[in-house]
Length: 106
Image: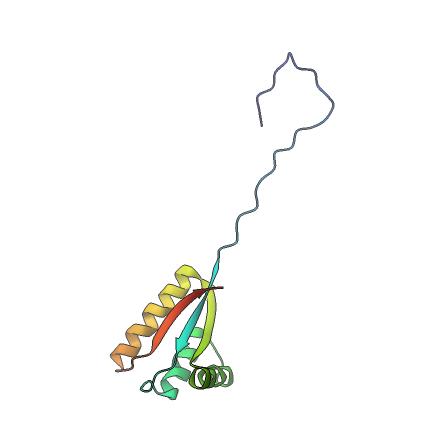
């Protein structure tokens, strides 16, 4: 809002300062990719533990990954998605699994 100038006439209208709405953070999909070595049990387990999926939904996602080559584990803000990719990748490597996770902007 500008400074009040006593030399200007008042028009009887109020000046309203408009605030911009905060921009909603972009969302990122965490994608699981199929490979010939990561076990289906491991994929279901990480979907339950890291992505808070129920056993039935985790199995459904695992089957999609197995049959279509890729599946969505979840959708998060970029920092959360990156953290999940990092943590799951660490666990997969520790278990000897080559599971590949990637991010894709929604």
